[in-house]
Image 1: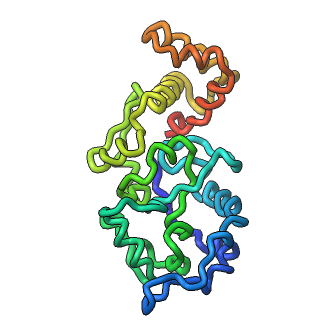
Image 2 (image 1 turned 90 degrees about the vertical axis):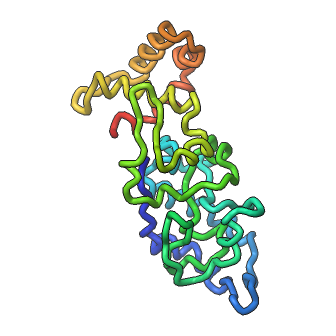
Image 3 (image 1 turned 180 degrees about the horizontal axis):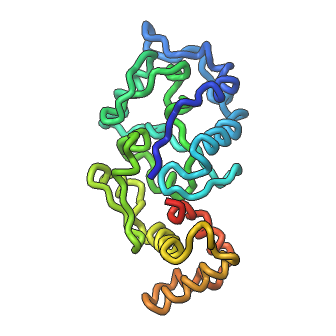
Length: 245
């Protein structure tokens, strides 16, 4: 798992300029002159900047992201919070000069804090479609803002994921699902047999060879689909993070 350092707001400000006067008015407990349609033209720009900020990886499963519609905008604090959760407090107190604390889900102190939470820079992440759909609007701690995150998520050679502190987040996002485990497992096998200096020349063939062996050993039809479907092979390639880390 990777820490996301939200320190790049200067890159985003040009796209948010037309929202600068649409801030939360504490005296009236509302946003003034705010219109969602103003955000639509800049969504792809925001998405691409978020992908760059996250070094081209999904904020949750670490799949390689593309700058197209296959990458979604994830709201760390849900767009439509479930009634009764702590997100209700966040929605009505989106004001400037908040000190960020990931354990209690406050937001950072920054120029773009005081926008509605569903377009705020600090609330937006780049995410693959699968993780976004699985997480939905479930309540999670913003673990990607934990600077020690890499020490708190562990993976083994079977593709399993572990975290004592963030176990609930793993469940809520579905990161222990077989789909992720299989892809992580294949890349850990590659990692155990190759290095950056002798990386497989024909990666697709290597992945198919591994998948074929796993199918024979485990009789899991997903591995057979990797052998027979080039699109699924390409999808597996996008999890190379688990070779590099």
